[in-house]
Image 1 (tube, rainbow, N blue to C red):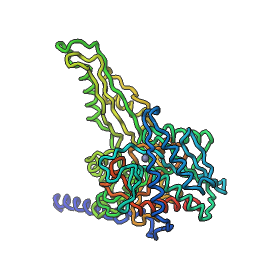
Image 2 (spheres, rainbow, N blue to C red):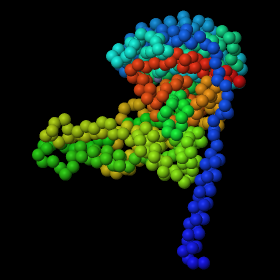
Image 3 (cartoon, rainbow, N blue to C red):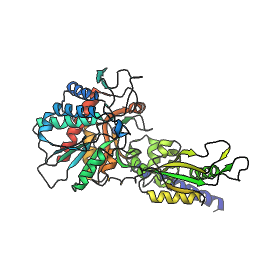
Image 4 (cartoon, helix red, strand yellow):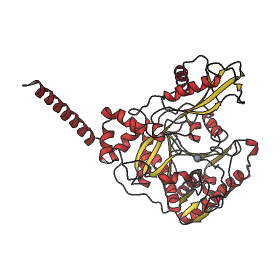
Length: 488
Ligand SMILES: [Zn+2]
């Protein structure tokens, strides 16, 4: 046989084998979704429930970074309102007040062998001025099939629907075997330290350990993921860490007419440049993004499905696609964002000190210490001092497992209320009150049963925040079902 024939045959063989492996992997890339079921519906009177939520929106529960500027009156008034509106909850559950406005409700279960579950929702909201709103943000207006106002999405609807669910269950004669707790902080939008921080500390001091903790996080979103038509319900099983480092350099200063070859500003700028030129390595397979696509991939259109079924071959290609846009790139790596830069305060004076602050969001697995060491190594300049900036640094969370009873019960609940939704675990980029509760449960699941499409997300902290009356009814159904499913 001629040599070239052998070469061609070899190439054909490789292509056939490769093609077969790709085809087999794609065909066996099975769905991880639950089998089709029927939707639960507890026949809640949605209009009356909407009215009760709308009333709670009228209390301007805005916390301020400066504690001395906080008006606590609306918090006190809202708590009076909740006690009056949910009488069975307040007469059946133990309600403990922590640090004046933090609330911890405990509904004692009959079986002490079962670890309790904990629901989280915060009372505070971000400020809102009337401008740009169709209905004023604190008017509690119900119109056009929606409840309008600050807090309808973030996060009063969660707090009030959880109370609705408990009130319903008590009225219905339900008696839990597993203890159910609800904790509500009052400064989540600022730091969470006064509310969630203090409640979590109290629970830790009392040796509490929860089967599952749930907090706000992802939603039921339509149109956000290419290749999937169905709404997607992501469950936040991990959360990125947070770190600010200050890079600085110092000199004698002097007149700018006789500058050295490099001023401290130049030294710091060069260090910043090196960090941007050397991003943290990306991680798809085996990381949070890879895990998410193990669930989403089988539900995607043919081309995407083929790609995600073959990460063994296409990991680099996938990382290339995801790194093209900042939000998806952030799912792959610890991100580097130089945000502050300071040199001399006069144009003709050499800076005695120049500095830059760089913000990092840590991928689970990376640590504050490891990131700091890498930064020093990449900068590789003894003239630059690297140190921790601000007091907000925290490590990335542990990753809650998916092969657990808690994840299964939680997914089952989503599936029963939103049967058409595709469910997947994911990593959140931002911190919420749940951050304070890390260590109190191996299963922290960040999700709110709210339906939005991808361009409605701007309503959160934005203008015209609203939730449909029907979706609010689904929120109540969700929490009733969640309590029941965890009681089995
Ligand atoms: Zn929130």
